[in-house]
Amino acid sequence: MNKLDIVNKLASDLGLNQKIAKIAVDTIIDSIKNAIIEGERVEIRGFGSFTVRNYKGYKGRNPKTGEVVEVNPKKLPYFKVGKELKDMIWKG
Image (cartoon, rainbow, N blue to C red; front, side, top):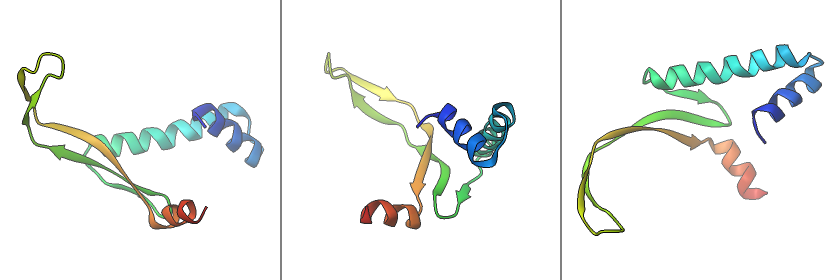
C-alpha cells in the first residue's frame, strides 16, 4: 500500500473527494515528519511510535577494499511497533 492507496481509501470510506483526502493525508504525514525532525516522540496508540535515535561514530571497513574508514555519528528515524498491532500480526 502506498500514499495514493491511503488517499483513495480515505476518500471512499468517508465519501470525500480525492483532493480533500490528499490534503488530510499530507497534513498527517507532514505533522509526524516535522515532530520527528524537532526531536519529538510521536505515538499513535495501538499502532506504534516514531522517534529519532542517535548513533555514535565508529570505525568501519570498506567491504571492497578492506580499508578502515571512520563512520560519523548520525541520527536516524526509528519506528517501534505498538503492542496491539504486534499482537494482531503475531496471531495472524
